[in-house]
Length: 110
Image 1 (cartoon, rainbow, N blue to C red):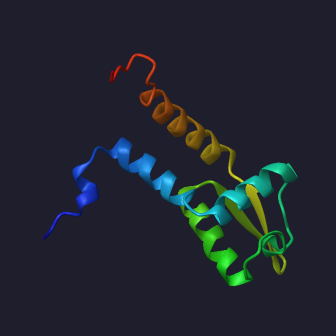
Image 2: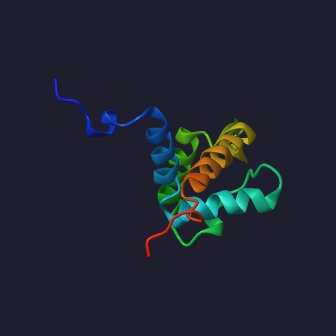
């Protein structure tokens, strides 16, 4: 059986890449920003906040849920969406480590 090319890299790099992939669309970033600014869970239609159709927004929400950045709980006929504190904390750690690795203050290319 052929090995996926992503399996050739360390797990830490794969995790970082999954977060970057989840954040690679402006709609997903806007969804996260909207939930963060709301400072509460949203029971309304998030698609009202984006210039995209409901089905498209739901696909983006699905990707953010899959990576663990948001949660969704069904309440009656609506779904209540929230930032997942554990997922957001993990994202912050991953991004901070990545940024620290890119520190170029001691790098000289002259």
